[in-house]
Length: 147
Image: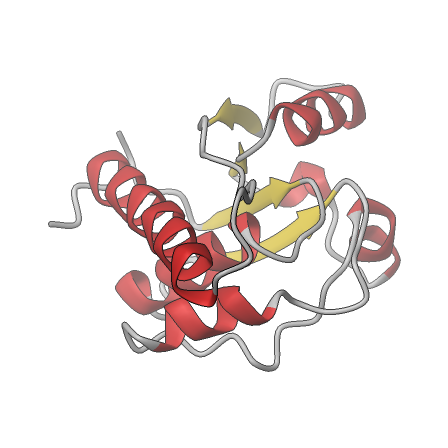
């Protein structure tokens, strides 16, 4: 596959999965690929556990600005201008395909776990977030042959 020059990652709230994917792409590819992320809805801020598990591997997300599809468009990033859209949740896949009325960009669905908690223990939550981070990193490495 030819490497895209621009990628949009999307998930439900732009506070966990899509910012992780955006940060990992920027870590692996620097500025050679334009990368953004959005959510179907936007939380007020990025999730603190997301920041923590990415910091462990040298990915800084503390300044990430959470936004949804409408906010992204209002800021000047238009979906049809991306080479690829990667949805990390079923809801974001449905939203992205609904918003795109053309052949370009292609929307891919990468099924990535959702951090659902059965425990209030911090370490248990970190384990789940690390697993999501590592799953996304493996998907990126596989897709873009970045091993």
